[in-house]
Length: 207
Length: 245
Image 1 (cartoon, rainbow over the protein chains, first blue to last red):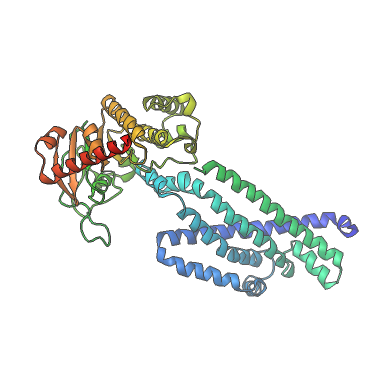
Image 2 (cartoon, rainbow over the protein chains, first blue to last red):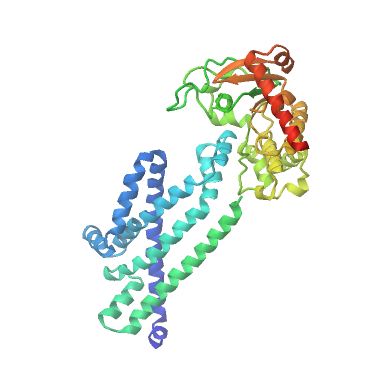
């Protein structure tokens, strides 16, 4: 406890770094996943290879994947963001596709029949109706990425991982805890916040 | 028109002219192609051959989105947007057409009144808070919001019980007489067809079996149509019996 109170400023900065890593990874992950999901919706045959590749990436130990990323991108922020985005694919692509496919056919038929363009149908009908499932998969991905982002401590990207790994190296438990407790707290808070968003979205659409 | 992997054309060799302002009912058993035919009008189905005209315009040459905004569309499953209020649902097409807010609001209230739902009570409700019959009233209001010259109705009252269906039929007949809209209405219910139609088109296996006014069909039916009427009236007798017993 005395370690934690003595290093409040540092821990705060590392927490912000950790959040930045996670959010950047999530943003890139969402962008890529949205493209892949669009592909799967347009060309259903692409579903199997896309899901299989995302699954294979997910099974590679994150540290090994990070080593490869560092080999090409160097140390620092970007290799971590890249592997976070890659890990998120497994959860996000399937989540987005499932969410969009579960929208009731009658509402889509009505949307088209009333003269919505494809874009209007997506933004006004499909996405609001898909929102709860979508937010659910974003929640799962976020919690997983908060945990994986600790690896940033190994490659000079900062984040709470650096506290954890330093503490382990020096066999200084207080420092390790000062890194790991905030990581756990971040995960719990993110989970609760996104759960609330999910519930609100669900209440808006439950027919 | 043939669907992928189907063994016959869903709609085949159909040629029919529907007078502007008429209430035309397409009737036939399920799978006879009546819904498919209806959906070629707003291009939700595109036939492999043949042409569909609305007024003087070939629908294939029109922008699908513009075409559909000028055609009302009501389906059996209703398809109200569950994340929108009643007012937002009814206002969907006016919103797409970029009417200003005050005009949309006024139109929504006018329409809710027209379909027998008190605006103040229903405006801000969500579809889940409505009965099946009320939902379809909203569905009808949504379809006619921008005063489309053509209204397509695909088994609109198929999912509600007999009593509600009867009152909805009366309503749509009344609404049809106040609007100057050409209505194309699909049903498998012969009774409903006779009750609503100025003109009936009887379909059978993708083709037109017979068409004309209800009187013409009742007076000189083809054997198939005569049989259809007979079966329907028998069914109704059983129904009545069941209710009495």
